Image (cartoon, rainbow, N blue to C red; front, side, top):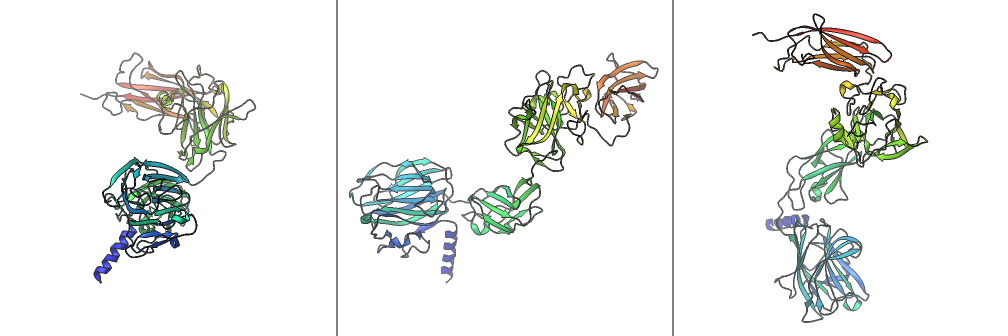
Length: 600
């Protein structure tokens, strides 16, 4: 009793993992394994072989059984035809099929036997839908008896996709190689079967025996979790390195997403090695980590502990006017430079730029020369600045880009004239933001606007509001690609102020307070500044900055050198900071510092 139980358990495991073995010695084809299809047109003969039954009509009949082996596999069987095969009387052995109906469209491979005359070849074909192509063309073989064909066939396919077709036309096991080929088009299977096409007079002449489908090399490699992605707000697809055994793959407790827990159900995907995890509540935007345990592949190999993969999900959102704003433009680059357009995510959520477009305007003011920003999903975090340009490296060389990963390289930008034009950010037919610019927007005292970006002052005001775009400050290099604009308003500032980070500095190279930091902060933008250093006796020793456009907030540094390039003496110095507004208002600030040195 124990031996019988053990045998049944082993058989059950064997069948579960996809292996097929049937010599019909049990006298049937309905169990161990179970064959389906044209069952009424086949029988088991006295020699315990599968045989086609006599029919009064010409037709094609098939039998098939479950098979999941597709690579690292060896197929064997015996075929006997008691007639001279031809195009109207032939047999196929379907090694791999994704469909039960072997007489219809499918994806798979088969060996075909049946050519006119007593010279037959054994050939391997690939079938894609209804398209059939030969991938191994075996040589013709002479039969002693033209009305009797007997062959034992062996086909192998390794993990690299190399097929080898062997035959013994005496029905023994002295195999001869018919040919080889490499093809990895279809690497999964659901069914194995036989296909018999006949006229009525040949209907009972097909005999098959000794079907065997086994591993070519024992598989001891466990499956791994390759990736995961969100299909919709309730469904996550998990993709594995190979097909899984069904019962473990469909167990929800084997899957867990951090902060979400186990799914409520698991279903097989359209991909053989993928499974869909369904959750009860919609996933919010964010980063996720999926962990899988206890699942097994078709050979019974269990996945390693704590297989994990990360994925990101962005909840569907349609961009609307005001979500993405024009923050900065450079349309008159310096020699060797390129145009760039900086955009700002004005929302509190991550936005996908896949549908975003950039344009200029035609003579009627309508969007023209429209360019797609990105062909794939591109995620822009909330409240960040991103730069659109054709040559990010050039922009990074000419300007201080604090966030170098916040660039989008486009194959081309719409054309923008230096003197005037329009920059339009849009989605489909909807304009999200538009800036009609002219060179007169630059600060009036600017002698040369080449290489000077126009920066947005306020994101609460319209792009077209008077004075909402101004020249980027000279003190920050005339452009702030990827970060806060130098001329951007800060409503928390209520008073103009100039201060020193420390009242004392010692330029001795010891790494501590080697330079004097002069910080400034202004309520309004568009200011110019001159900064001079005086000795305690009122002698001008250093013109640190002269009539430079400055940001609304920033700093200057003095390294202790005078205008002659010499180190200033230890002592007290006065910093005079003069700020000039475009309306003619002048404001003066004074700070005192000490240039110190170490005592010997």
